[in-house]
Image (cartoon, rainbow, N blue to C red; front, side, top):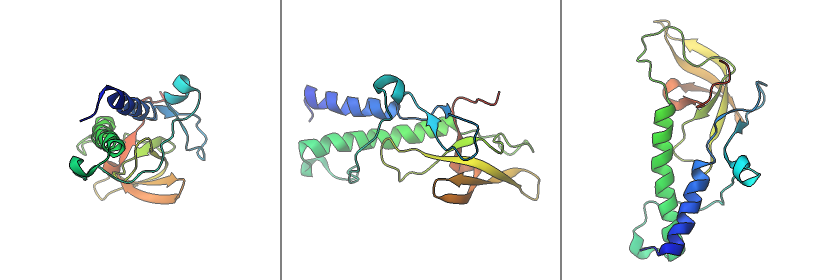
Length: 163
């Protein structure tokens, strides 16, 4: 059981998670994979997390107070990031031939393995229509290189600067 002071520390880390989310792209430069987040407006710099072991599967009886706090943050992050990405994701049910994502868009890449405060960004560089002319596969550019990903692994940023 966490006391008031420890719960305050956990909620501060949760606040950092919420304020690390990308809102919109900073530029239309295809080589720029950076996004605007609420964090710099609040603390003057990007919010970063320290690398930690995954504690979300550990039982609480075996954890120290610090590890219990980190476990609480990791459980929050896992649930909140998945719900947030699901909310961002567009599900057109394959009824439209024109994709909702366009070449040049900056998108979030769904990756359940990322630790708190880490968001993988990618730039759309090509679309691949299927035999039915519906677009489900995209070529994206990340900081690690070029990949092909299914639409279900890509999320548009919440603020569209193209309109």
